[in-house]
Amino acid sequence: MKLALNKVTLCAAAVLFSSAAFAEKVVNNTITLAEVKAAQQAWGEALINISNTHEQKGAAAAKAVAKQVLDAAYGYNMGAVLFKPTLANGEQTFRTTYDGALSYFVAGDKNFAQDGGFALKGWKKYEYENAGVYLNGDLALTMGHVHVTDKSGKTTTVDKTWGFKKDAEGKLRIVLHHSSLPYAAN
Image 1 (spheres, rainbow, N blue to C red):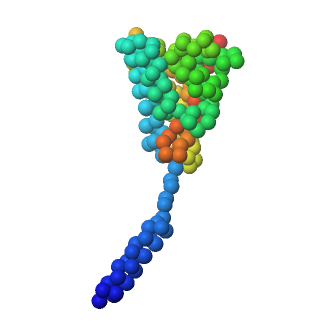
Image 2 (cartoon, rainbow, N blue to C red; image 1 turned 90 degrees about the vertical axis):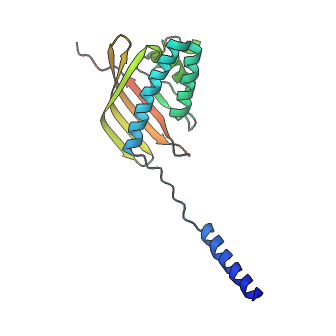
Image 3 (cartoon, one colour; image 1 turned 90 degrees about the horizontal axis):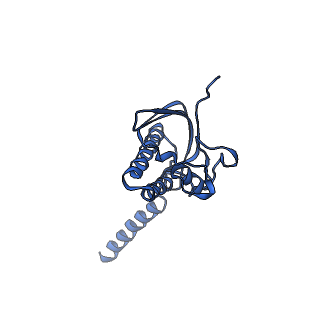
């Protein structure tokens, strides 16, 4: 009886462990429209948070928040991010480094002396509207307008293109950020 019980236990263990060894692992890095919209909304909320932090606690605190935003939202952990800020020109039009993006948002970097700190402009309201969204597996592209309103009620509209990619942990990251002011015909 004891020998039979041991054989049954051994067989049950073999079945259990063999099925675990061959358990199907599914990895799905497909980006959804809901994830893209959530990332766009989070970006705007982060912009307002940096602006409010600057008003309430000063430049150093705003810079700390901006670093948290860059670390959480952008794909610098995956390589270069293609970043073209709204108000940049000349040799510093395109920013492929973390420091270049940080300076654009909060200024204060002597290597980017032209930056005034886009996130420090007293933004109080943010809206986005997509003209189009392209979803392709772990890559998503959007193009449309971003509207930001400052504390005096003045709204600025920016043409915005974002590229999002999922990182190894399945988190959406901005890997392309292009902003420009709308063309004004003479």
